[in-house]
Length: 354
Image (cartoon, rainbow, N blue to C red; front, side):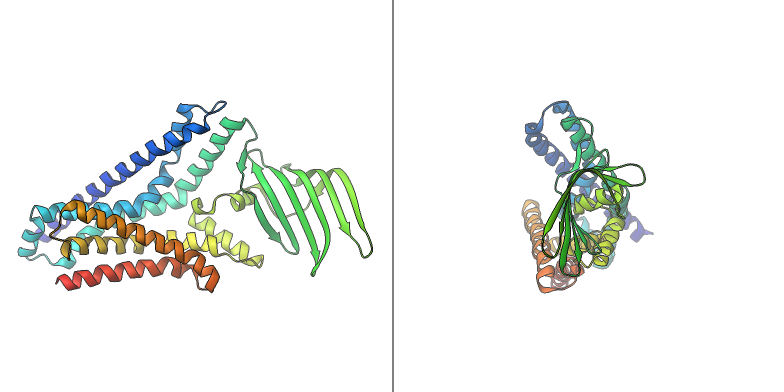
């Protein structure tokens, strides 16, 4: 059937353009980041190791650049067919605008499946492995996996972790134990070592706050009874943005169970879960630029406006993220709001063009 053939033709053109744009973006990012990261060369971490590290991180970079690649790729793919009057011929042959849009959406559906697979199964592992491999090359065995540290709560106990190493050793642990609103004890340990089934604190100072005095006790080692495992701590201290959707949801549930806000993990969770709607809205905007008010301008101008639109979309999401914490609305709306606005703009311009 002619319509099916035209669908496949549109899909091939758009998919090819998206792939080319994605490769160009990844190539530029690789070169710029490689030059910048050469400042970190030391020890066993040389120029070749920098390149290997960046190659390990390609799945995550691919995921990050996908929305921009889809927007610009759809603009270039449809714009090329519009410039050669192929879209005009298709419309004259009876192919509706809706059918053309469906042809554009087909490769986007394939891209969505690939991106969701990367986000869940590939990029979290590749990022974790790349980080550990890089730091071990720079620092030797027992390198620090997470240098950002962080606070965590477990019942009436609050923890401050300095970092966690690749050999499952926590560096600089501080524990505050409360009884109601009253601080009962504060424990500082230089290290917490995982011994297979339990933790052992080393170089420990325990300060107990009594009614009329404070007592300090020093210990070489001390047992640490907690539900935290090395895997949980590594996930809690790892960069939230690179975690898998299932990990983000588990992290958010854990924080809520501890009586804490879970805005950040939920924000990234909804960003990844609503990726199909995000890409579909960007495709609508790209199509509106080709069929709408920008159909008569040069291809470079359309791409320029596409880049501006993509940046505006990202900045709007970035602004709504802290706003969801400040005003108390769901992080899902911080993602869904710009997506719906983008889709509405695309549909309006398409309807206006007839």
